[in-house]
Length: 330
Ligand code: BTN
Image (cartoon, rainbow, N blue to C red; front, side, top):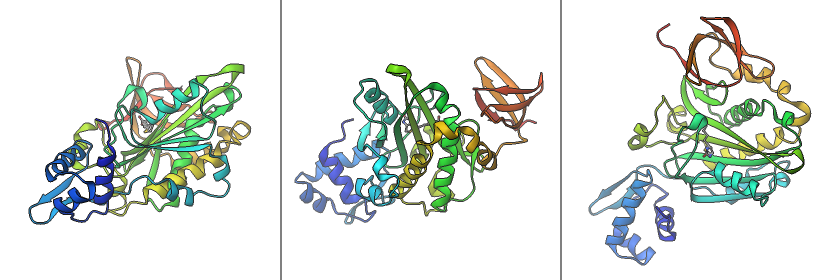
């Protein structure tokens, strides 16, 4: 679906979460009441829930805080601001990661370019999964950075997990944990994830796109789209989630603190803190790797960021990749 200018204007009028009559909305947009009704149906398809009550009009089931470049800029730290090349904000995009990977491969984006979207039509997760994004209900953030060589960003996705956990803590979100390698959890359910993508460039350099997805409010109508236990910031904070724009700025503040010095500092500066956020040590789990399902108990993470698992077959082993699931049958 193309996200039209009128649809955006309608959404801005409704974003406060109050009732607006069909007549007022139609007048403000210069369209018929039937056109307003059709646009409301389009909003529903995007994942926005609303009530329509005769005599009162339309009301979103909750206010929506739309992405706002100025609000994000205002909450950036003085150290972060000069490092940002550009912040792109899209109403609709296939995927913020795909967008920056495309810009990186055509050489048309500088390190420090940030891409945000209200809605992704082809959001991508790890291991080929789809990442679902109801309109305005998620943080979809990608950031492009460049490294001089491959070793310079070894373990980066774990360090990014620490940055996200710190940003959530700063915004007062309680009880966040990290799961190897790239998940943000809350009481065992998925709150967010990281998708790091890399492409080689001239002179041995690498473009790295750091993609972060965080669930802010997933409407119940969309719950069935997600194939694993999930949670959103709305639930975690009992209905008082942090401002989306401020949290985005907080994430950027943490990422820009991390990235410039990462080649010198490496994972060793973050692994101790990663272990403190780790919430699965000692838990029985299965690691899905290729066609294999390896059963064992999560023992921890090595200094170089590998998963250490006490396996039923083979004892303590280290793994560089895989999809880890907790076992409830142990
Ligand atoms: C995962 O846990 O599977 C990783 C999810 C990463 C989702 C984010 S949303 C922003 C960026 N754009 C994408 O298409 N994916 C990442």
